[in-house]
Image: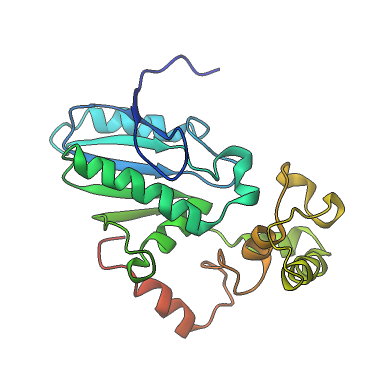
Length: 224
């Protein structure tokens, strides 16, 4: 078991009630890395980011500390939240970090957190505050992974699409129409976003055409 570790809690104003970000490393740093985990992740669930913070602490000339963010999609909340929700939650933290005079802000996405990075870079849609760079660590296609693991994946996507067409996209799927591995209630819309071709989360699938990929990657005007 990992030993206790120190951090500094930052309460900040956000669309998500009671939002707090957790800073690790040198809290006097002039720059910030915001770590965004994957499905079912939340603050303190991804151990390697604490190692990253410790290593950055040894390099004070870089001037970075690491923040973990609790969003409405954190832990089991992923099942009823969306990438758009995440963008609003991340934007609130970016605004707070600018207000406390952090000079450079980097978004560090892990797994599904990489989808958040691509979504965040859609500045014309959200009018969200820009950041200074992105790290995409282990981006994956949730759709292609599910299709390899579950022979009935497409049938379940069709069931979710039917619920959405009936105006019930916000309702949770019956347990038999979801994947037990998810371990949480999942709305029809979120399931469709994750596992349908062209769903909101479908940024990294190998069968996306060049025009679609070009549109996604053209969003980035800072280093990735």
